[in-house]
Image 1 (cartoon, helix red, strand yellow):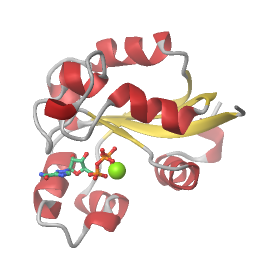
Image 2: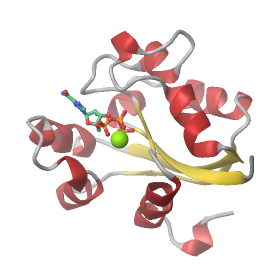
Image 3: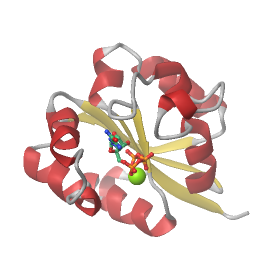
Image 4: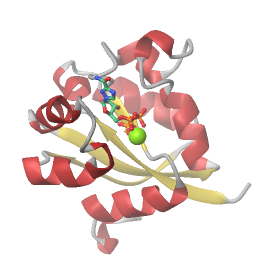
Length: 139
Ligand code: RTP
Ligand code: MG
């Protein structure tokens, strides 16, 4: 498998609960290299654009409120098979269904507030990384 990149956000609940360090530790020990990282806060327009694919869903309003209520950690990660392996590491969207040892099993409270984002394809990883980072911020 070739090396590729994925995009992640440690969401506002993960930051509020003091879980940045523990989640980054899991990311590092799982073999991901941090290519870019920053603490930032999404505006309403940012969140509506980032999650535009969900704009017809009943939870869209709550999702935008949640993702804009405080800072997030945005990061780009590199590893062989990064997109798929990171989705495995974070676990199912609903933490009640997430496997033991996954980030969402350990640190997420609910399907709505689930601690972490992971890109779902190589194409979306590139779009999402470019949404948050300039080329000079990727190492
Ligand atoms: P993400 O995009 O954040 O990595 O999450 P995901 O692929 O596992 O889940 P997705 O279907 O893309 O949903 C995006 C985010 O919307 C919120 N959500 N709430 N209340 C609900 O039923 C519900 N469903 C989804 C979650 O924050 C989810 O991660
Ligand atoms: Mg998704």
